[in-house]
Image 1 (tube, one colour):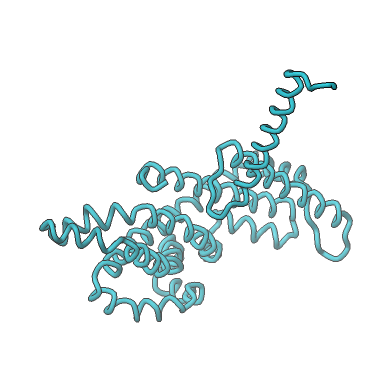
Image 2: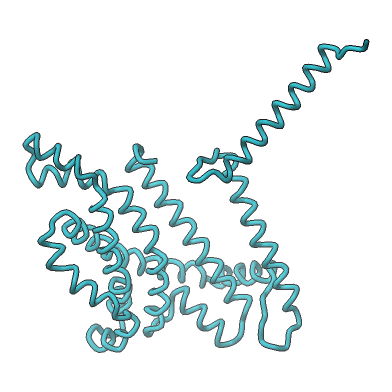
Amino acid sequence: MATATPTADVGVDQKSARAGQRGRAVGRLWRVRGELTFRWRVGLGAAGLVGVVALWLLAANATAGSQQGIVVPSPTATWDALRELHAEGLLVSDVLASTERILYGYGISMAIGVVVGLAMGAFPSAEGTLEAPIGFVRYIPASALTPLMLLWLGIDEAPKITLIILGTVFYNILMVADVTRSVPRQLIDAATTLGASRRRIMARVVWPHSIPGIIDVARINLAAAWLMLVVAELLATDEGLAVRVVRATRFRDYDRMFAILLVFGVIGMLSDLALRGLRRWAAPWNR
């Protein structure tokens, strides 16, 4: 009777082990709230970007020579337009102007949101006083206040920064308040039992526990700040990414329009990565 050699048995066992490892790896991809290794995360992210570029190429080929006004420039044409903007000196000045408005406007918005949101989330008296008026005002579209901003603040940078603040601050306040309310009551009770004052509880318990959530709030609402920037930069200005998009649209310069939209996306992605890095640095215990 023929018997399997030890070498063949080892080869079969190795193949079975590798197949089992691949099966477990694939299973982890679809596990609810599962963890991904760095290699899988990078690989899936790269695959997603390749998929977006592939769809872009398909759309560009499908609309090439279209007479219906629906035109999607190719990635090559978009890149050439981006290089032209840079060579003309417009790209850098527009990016700096828009980024400066976001830094001032959204920075002030987040500062107000953190202070007021922490107070509302920690103290019922502050919540009872402020929640109703904030809930009312936040439903007034900030863009509808554009004429008032021009009448009250003129046509310089003040109305632009104010619009960014008004378009994001109320959402920041309410979301930071929700983050503060998520601090476990047991931690606050334990600190109170040990004789900690209100100031010490806020500084040593509420604030550290809320840091990761506050940074997540900043990440989420940063997109709304860029949205308000588009409205703000329509107020009598010659520099800014939104201004460049509007001018490109007016002359149907689709290549430049897509180039600026690409810049928006890159800035947003880099900002998101920076805030994620800040979250890991500020709260390494909450990864």
